[in-house]
Image (tube, rainbow, N blue to C red; front, side, top):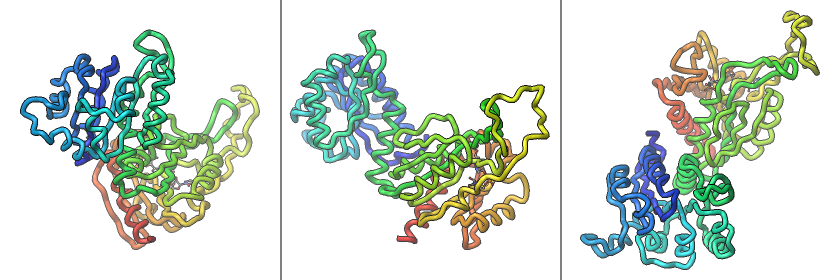
Length: 400
Ligand code: PMT
């Protein structure tokens, strides 16, 4: 449970497709983000997956028949009014056609017609059907009206063939729902946040490098939190983690690559958050070929200083740096806050086993330029990201 959609009402429309079973995973993931999930099934969907499944997952009976017994006359329109986002997943060819032509004879199509909320659709069908002119015409018509398409992607289809028409995976769909609701309601909507993550790699030869233990998790969690708050997020990373949906990745290797990328991306940034573990030094020489063991004299690897990225990059944006310390945490972090010209310094003790490198939690203290010291308890890195972004939002607000 990460609370990113706390209090939000998402209507999940499910149409009839072999991918309908994945709607259960989508419903479960949405519930885990704190959203209130209401489900509208088409009759065809109810043939693939029972209403009971969704009742168990969401705690609410899905809407199937508009005129189901016992529902007050306005129930179906009330559902449309309550919706802060309508997600149709899977969206069959038939349902896309009904939405495109404004039909309203089942709970799903009626909700789509009666809601003012954003409508996102995740198509799922055989490639022949997806590529058919009629479906493509419906897609174009819906896109023109502002319906957001999530996929489809190419891959193995129910028919056993491979081609376009496979539904985007549930995790990616929910990521994009979180991003859209962030853009609609988040306090970083319209902002550009640049985040660096991972440990840089300073080449010794084509095979070896000087590196560190940073996994990238801290930076990726901040990027995910910023996306959930509506920011356009650029993640400059040397790590190999799965990029959060809706976040733009700029892959880098060395400190100098990272410097170039940070300088380029910060031209439009509202904030830069340097969570990456950037190597302070790199080998003076990079061998063109793999150094043979016989010739490898470790004493001969001379190191030269790398540029200090966060101190170097200038511009009108909030600058947040991290301090990875093994001792004198606050004193060392405060020195870096001043030396690097940052607005906030996030100090973490990287000798702790439940914080710092590689783990999913972190224990940080946030220092500011007014002498403020905000010691946070052990939190998930996502929650650390949220708390850190609360401070960034305040600084941005103060700057107008
Ligand atoms: O990635 P994880 O496995 O989740 O681990 C998270 C983390 C421990 C890497 C993260 O929380 C963290 O502490 N990141 C900063 C690590 C680091 O390089 O700290 P530092 O004290 O050496 O550098 C201070 C600041 O200057 C950092 O913001 C760093 O990005 C920046 N820096 C450092 C060197 C350099 N040449 N250029 C820089 O911009």
